[in-house]
Image (cartoon, rainbow, N blue to C red; front, side, top):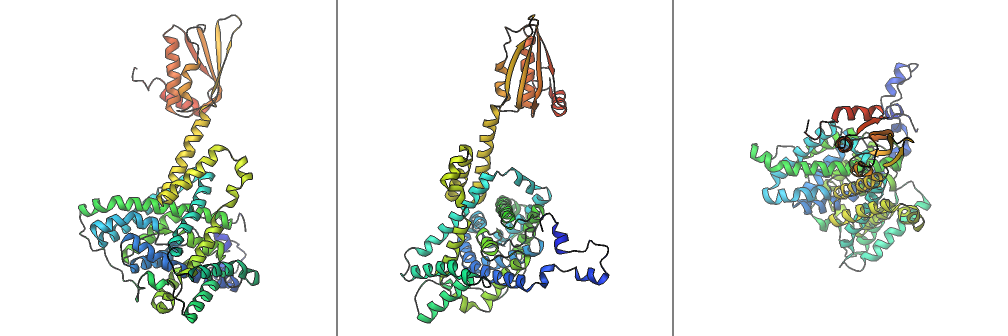
Length: 513
């Protein structure tokens, strides 16, 4: 229900007319009584869990740790964030971005330092969340968001290329068959997610026919028991803190960036709002829990989130929780069966996710013709940086900075000065229009005729707005140049905010007073 707060949609207790029994019944989310929702969430969680296994193992290899470390991290991250996160149905687990950040620490100092860094990163994320870092998301332009989504789709596809290179020839028809199943099976029924059907059918075919193709088991050994909590094996000294702090801060920032961007993406797909502050703090809590269980940490996983939300249709926390729970059940109880799943089946799922994630409308010729060149530039730079660095956070920062530079350059030309001289030649009025800030005010000083103007000069700022100290300094410089020629300047028309900053800073910026 659009416009209805999450609490009132899922905990409808606000009506005073409700009986105590009704209020008690209202303590549980309304989706718990809907069998269709249960089925969707359970099956979605199962599909995501299957897709998580090879990804977690791959990211463990990147980080230089045992595959079990990545699988444990995916389990604890998903289960914890399902309870404390701010975005329902979003999947958090071990990720490649986090693995890249902490890999050097593990390589140089060992697993104990890596785990300690994960815990400290969680603490940093809680602090940043409490300080309101999520509010910075409002400064991410739409063109950056489009570039982020398209770069994500490209990265997802690129991650599948190694699984299609130098492999036995049966891999290719298996991938094609998996894609065909996911395209056509929903036309028959949507009760069971097509990716799950594809994985099951391709696994049965390869096992029954004895087809020798790469399998999940070839990625690494699956764990046979649950993780055990404990403290990181490091000396608790200041030296340890200074060693892990830079890695922890980098991990915290990268994790928050990816998680908040993913949450914003899911908001748009589901047409619902989520608490970014709660998500930031939740990511921190999840990483702290993960660290105490010996995991490698993580953040929101965009590919698996797309499987959960867009492909499988999940909308609640249940699917996120079950993705983590099923992950451990599949590894510990059904390890031999899961090990036989052909990688081709999971590659087909991720290729489909990549295709569905890409914003094809953004590159349509009709769209590109109408889009301002600056917007296209920002989108292209975001995509290029992400693909080159394999880091979504770096791409988003690069794209946002580019957008700000383009915006500043565009706005800098919006400050205009027009002069009207009094008929008797005794005074001149300069009308300034536009936004005055560091970029536009730089040219302001050169638009006045100091030597030729009469003795009385009026600067009318009725149609202008002063934003920063640079603009006040420019006005002071104009007054100084006229004063040196024995001429007086009167500034009129300041709106209240402009008058306040001008009164506070005028005459205080040159140090000559």
